[in-house]
Amino acid sequence: MQKLFKGLKVVELASVLAGPSVGLFFSELGAEVLKVENPNSGGDVTRSWKLASEDQKHPFSAYYSSVNWGKKSVFWNLKKEKDFEELKMAISAADVLLVNFKAGDVEKLGLDYESVKQLKSDIIYGSISGFGESKRIAYDVVLQAESGFLFMTGEAGGKPVKMPVALIDLLAAHQLKEGILLAMLQQEKKKQAVKVSVSLFDAAIAALANQATNWLMGNHIPQAMGSLHPNIAPYGECFVSADNKQIVLAVGNDKQFKALCKLLKLEQITKDDRYKNNQARVNNRHLLAEILSGKIIKWKRDDLLSQLIEHNVPAGAIRNMKEVFELPEAQERLLEETKEGELLKTVRGNAFKIEVG
Image (cartoon, rainbow, N blue to C red; front, side):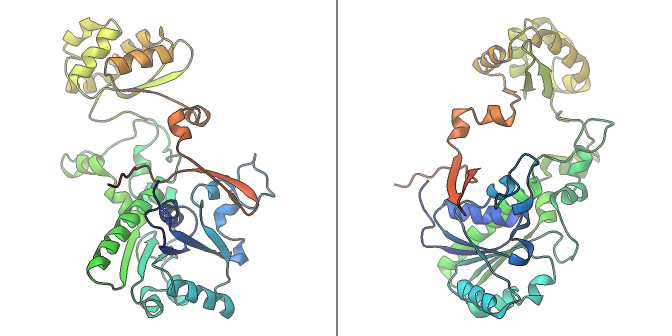
């Protein structure tokens, strides 16, 4: 990818996932990102978030590796005058400052927006919080709960199940990146300081999309239903194949449903009132799933998937991480570097491609 931000200087006073994801965005695009870590806590807390299988003597975890590629890390104790002066010098030379302190802490350190503007009059100040001005500590699963996501996940009648990545953190990071890019456009008109702030809670609410409007427009409280879609069927139904592998269907319209039924030799059910249109299929989705399951179990997964793709029926193989990274498309997404004497591996955070000229 082109180094579109070559020459841009970013200071990252952020830890865990949301703020560092923004730093990674700029790092991948050629910016010089200085990550400031607290030596008193052993640096970014995620350095120690290791799986039981990881080398406990390794200087950083696989989790830390996910969003800290291409950055220069320094360990500065901001309560020490010498280290704080180093930080102020770095900020005065920077274009962007990223912070994710909880409310109140940033003022105590003298790193609030008004103070930072005195160091750099045209700084872009990017701030991530959990609950806005609240001092409440926020981790991703707390936001998943408070924003309604956790209520909707898991199987019907079962316990809530958190999403397996810190999705709210990543959503907030995307919101902040977009805001910073808009600030850069604004600075093309007038070079002045700009503050861009986002809370994890606001980012989560913004991402509720159709589930929010199901309530706001339809007075329907979305319920946990596993991988199923409340408005479409068969969409999200998972099936086991003859070789004991899993596949998921995502049929979005009647044409796709008819193509699926033709492939599975189930043409007769397309004329059945219980399945002839999407609303009927939603109302009878469990009966439909039983019928489909009886046919899909006779196929090997990859053979069936190949035929579904050929017949324009949306479907996907349910892959584990090993299987995902055996795909050539996933291999192209890898990033590696040597950091602190150890190999760091991660995946590109930027999925877009840009062609200039």
